[in-house]
Amino acid sequence: MQLRKNKVNFSKINHIFLSHLHGDHIFGLMGLISTFGLLGRRSALHIHAHEDLKGLFEPHLNYFCSDLPYQIVFHNLTFDGPKIIYEDKKVTVESFPLSHRVPTCGFLFKEKPKQPNVRKEAIHKYQLQVREIVALKEGHPFIGEDGKMVPEEELIIPAPRPASYAFCSDTRYLRRIIPVIEGVDLLYHEATFGHELKDLAKSTSHTTAKQAATIARDANVGKLLLGHFSSRYRDLKPLEEEAKAVFEKTVMVKDNDVFTIER
Ligand SMILES: [Zn+2]
Ligand SMILES: [Zn+2]
Image 1 (tube, helix red, strand yellow):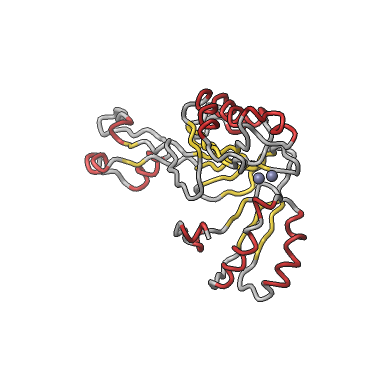
Image 2: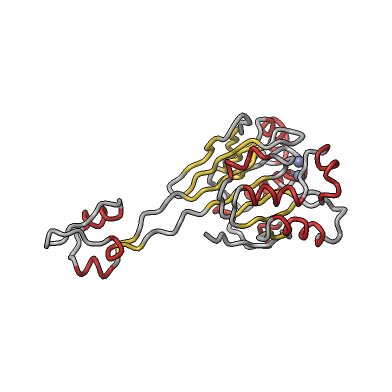
């Protein structure tokens, strides 16, 4: 329903990454699978989750979706260390273990570095051939007719820095993730409680807003998104304030908010 509300093109969704098997994170999946089928989806849908998901879902799929017009491919997450679980020409997705009441993974989405563009004026001025353009994009120098190397600034426009996003939910306060998410442009981290309930956060394997901000600060991330708030908080202002006191670039997330990754 939320994807529809946000006009997300369903056919562009080919991989689903599920951090852990708690209801608040997976109960919508069955409806989504069924809806995709009703809309006539044909291409396979890949679901990356704990290995138990397949066994849990198969009876439901057999009962409710026996004539599903597309294939579901289950990929089992592992929980013993960071691992690249998806890769294409543009991005990699890495899972890394979190610490929660059941096996849980965070996900790190990283754009691959792009090649620089060759300036149109330079192509014209030096009558560059395709192989010379390819060589320039790959970082080779270009020697002019006078035998001198042409300065790089005159030839190429550097590619934008690759963007990165990390998703960490649910987890207790876990400092060992810092090197994994170091320097990401955008970090989503759970903040179920305010720091006044830090003992409850610990006993339920969740994080406080202050702790999440500490992770963001120490990992030197670009921006922090906080979510997964306990329903006991009618007003999120105190959580926002305690987080911002540690890490200023913190945003409290509501359903349907949209963020652009700033590099
Ligand atoms: Zn959970
Ligand atoms: Zn949860």
